[in-house]
Length: 242
Image 1 (cartoon, helix red, strand yellow):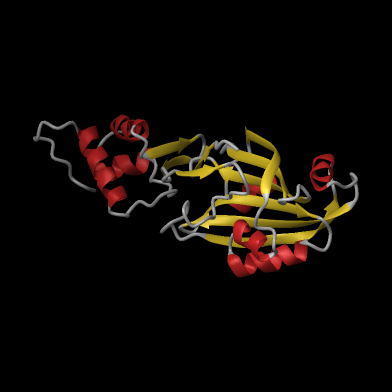
Image 2 (cartoon, rainbow, N blue to C red):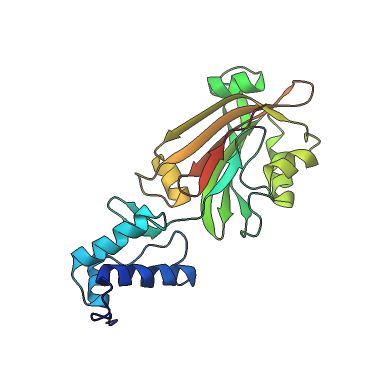
């Protein structure tokens, strides 16, 4: 049990706040990490749960912690602002500077095109298209899941380019498609599907920020259709003109 100073005149809950804040700043509690429960903290500090709840509530209000219903209290992840125009994914050097970025391909195959995918690629609904699934990480935390649909025979090229470069922007450049821009874009917030939750390690009630857009080259030719799911709390979308 950690002893608090009960004669200092400083409220016990405020002392607990300072201790938790100090552990966060020292890296003892890391971004995205789940904290001990109220009961565990109460035993650790020798106080009642109401005192712990006061301390936690203050840190939540200040943006240092977040609470997930049914899962517990977590250290809030530092938010990265990501431009949502163009082909930008939060895997570029500027957004991830010094953040241990990593992109990994987790799936690849063919499937019939939905109406949205077919419209973006200039093909027929139901026609086979290539699909590449990838995840992006910051500091070993999965923060996005992206799916890119391409005309058949291009999926393998994109997978190879992604493995070699690590970002969608660089991969498209490697394929000679560096002048792409987004069209037909949509932005929405929703809860993850069970499959998305498994891949990203999310609770069912943790929201996603989702962007959907077709990509065209400099001549206006359809190149790809991509869907990106950003984990809420890690990424904040910055809408850019153009």
